[in-house]
Length: 445
Image (cartoon, rainbow, N blue to C red; front, side):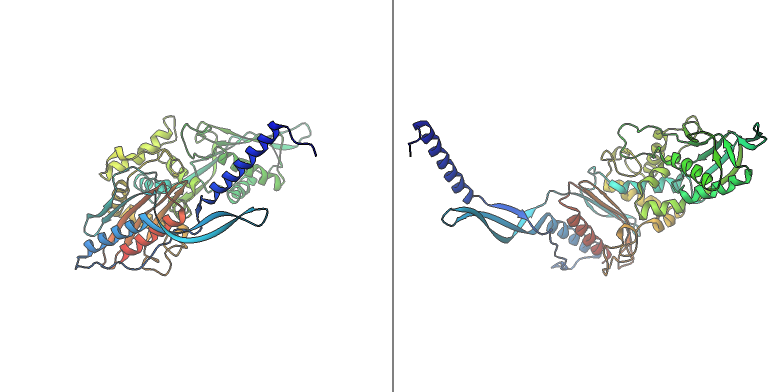
């Protein structure tokens, strides 16, 4: 067998040396990964000296935060080894317990509504992304500005008249106008109701279209969520589809359209639908429905030539001012909380919750709309079989890297508390929820 040229032998030798060195280095390198979620020890922390109820609560909350900050986790270590004559690489896995420092940014404020005083704070004046806790501001503003008796009204108007074609066939000519005041409940059932009312025209064909009102036709810069510009178009499409199912034909190929100018003064009022505000708030808060939240926000300003999205947001800022909070500590970008541009502090949130508590027309419907721990909504599976079960009523919030919880609860001494827990840059939803659950249970003691 002829020998390899000197250059090729040198390159082959160099490659073998590099392979050996890299294999040796790999044996000295450990790959660690967390294989279990952060564990929380829920054992009661008992102060060593006698304390009052409020001192004990502050001590326990501080202890829970410290325990969460330096969490104990299970890690798996992977170490590469070589086995066999061919020295194939394989791995040996070992597991061990390790204490790590979490990166979570946590802000907490607890207001004693019974004593009317701040009970506990932790980074409570720092700005945080509130996620769906933004819906609390919108709900309070709606109840304050619109009131419990407000209805999302939808007017059906027409300017149709009867005509006859050359075959002496009678048909309706004109348009059907759907002017809804941001009612998010307009679905196929609502379209069926509207279609049934329109059947009173008693014709089998229409030369015209169904027109719906859509004031926000384009996405506004920086908005994380907006009133779906297809929402009103969908109700128009559903009405057309239902009329066709009922035997009404349309002469136009696309018998529906949208406009951005109000329709409440065009034609004659034919029929109306109305949805009470509490019905919308219940789904908005318990199910954290984003479209419903935008509907409520957009209903806070007049829908005429002066209507604007900024005017709606100003109504929410008015509530911050009424609550006595610093308006510079609140930035509103949307009503749902999906935007990462929203900002608030725990102190602003508890100030608004306190303002709601001091206004019976706001507090009762707001409380009833909030998820109840262990029973319904987004808290239906949390805090079960604890002191918080059925006691905590709070709004959850979750977007990427954010988990929040704010609301009301009653401590065992009978004091009613308003609290806000805002967590940003979280290590994971599981650990964030675990801490929130534990803090709520401790506040219920």
